[in-house]
Length: 476
Image (cartoon, rainbow, N blue to C red; front, top):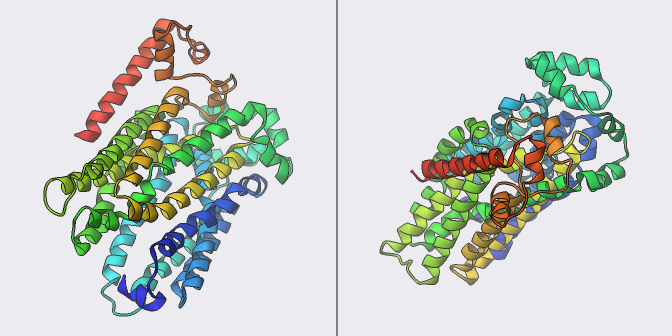
């Protein structure tokens, strides 16, 4: 935006990458440590504190007359995001009925893309203002929304699971009734908390962070760290933040590239995110991970190959292959990995470590997000195709690991999910099919669910059918 450059001066690619990415790095540190305060003071208290910090950051950015102040504002905003994002997902998972947990936990991501789309058009409209108000106005709007969010936190009921963990059972029952959850499900799931979880909830800040690495919880913590970190290393934020550069690199005029990267992509992402959120409990977590991994890695490799063989020019079909692939990548991510990582990382944790483990995983997500935002312009300046092969390889590696080791959690009560993780890490889905093909015995997960070898095989083949059907629907 020329008005921003007039105020701040010209910014080099490396400084641009730092300015964009600093909000993620700033979010990583408070996110790492937001879990214990959420256990002590409640989920909503931490969310409200994060919203206030974000509002302060937005005000600093809106009032900046130097790049230094603007960056400080982004640090405050990032710290706020780090506080509320991970804890917000924990709160929603804890207040949701099992059958609708995926859809309800998808709402923050859905509203994020709605806000992103609204932000694109706000910036598109304000760019015509011939003063610095053109770039300041969006930050003013962000500050107002953040303040409203902080106020709303005091109007919402606390998590009933958190209340039970704090020994406030009567208050938890009242909240469950207020939420309209059936008493049978509440007694079976929400109000059923293990004594060991209650006792461990009163540990110190230091011991809360140590607890997530205890033997019985370590596997779940590692899985949450892996999925939230690696979905960011797919390169999605490199695509979203630098889409105008990618479109211009493919041969589009600058104005056209900016429009496609903002307005059109924002609208399409919103359109595909709505059914993805609604169907989150229909597809299942594994289906979303596998379909998304196949599409994301394939599209990244395709774009890398097109540039590597010199098929992309300012004229010809090659540039349109890349342009369409960029759109397809963003839409595939929005329909799959954008939702499943945040949901899964929260629901696989027991009550005593849910906030702490998810906050650390969210912190890692911020950090990897910042790495992607920092290195993408540098990679694009060094090589036309290197970034695509890097992110494609990381996406494929993520797909392989999760297809082998990620158990399905769709529709299961949070407390029941813990039974799956009470045994050592097992192969799942494709990994079990492969092991059975090599003559191994049936898996522990199959025995835990009470299925015979034949029944397990049928379930696994049914999963393959769902993955294939979902892939066909997305590609169609």
